[in-house]
Length: 388
Image (tube, rainbow, N blue to C red; front, side, top):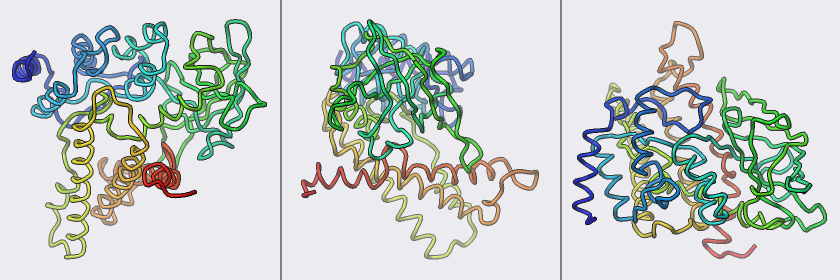
């Protein structure tokens, strides 16, 4: 189908099928599974998009995608932005493990897992960091011992976002204790609803948290759910992190809202009475850098092939993006003045309390998905080619 014909087809379909409740700012994008309730409108929008392959537009049709090349995918994004349509599906399934299985998974793994991800039936979480293996991930000690057609897993993971709501985990484990640090590691898929898995949410200073700690006590992963070769999982695990850190998946992976979102910084700024010159300059500088960041993301998508795997330059997106998110929260909180100190009680509006809690919560972004120091090291070594 030509681009013009595809645009017309998508435009008519969106106008007819996208519910009003799925347009503009509103309900959070669902991450899959059924442990977290979503509205009737969000579920309807998810099902409609899954039927057309629009939850994962770049994936092959046999796995629930729409087989769109990059040009057609960008047309889809443009038309969704035109009506402020929210993404039908997000999460680690479409953004992380799905693309990784497309590259490294067996035909059986793809057939079993990818269609369920595309339909939003399964929610995934990531088992990487451990109490003694965070930035130095290769020091992980969670063990997986092969027994017949299964792996028996013992150990602990931490900062497992959404583990309390997840159905499956993709987990880095040590399968050869005698191998060198970066060898003897395997990536396994395992179900969360089994007796050997215990999940405990971690409460942060913001009052709540998506993070959890996860304990394995003879947990089971099937041998058929080993991704890639046994003891060669470090390469697979690193590639998955490139999908996580790129930020490009927001545009090209179907994982986040392709939507023209309300700009709260500018909305709130225009409501201020007589902002001083220094603050005006600060807001202007922030908006220019944020706009440049989004344009760079878009350019990266335009210049890449739809099946291209992100490279080490993704650390640039992660480093800059995390800084912008933290700075945005600080600016919003500062514009509230003393009302940005509210925690609870009738003296503060819900928006004010939410802004304060977000300001506290978002500070984790300098550590989550790889600390800023780790990102700078990757940029120095693998992008700029600087010596160790």
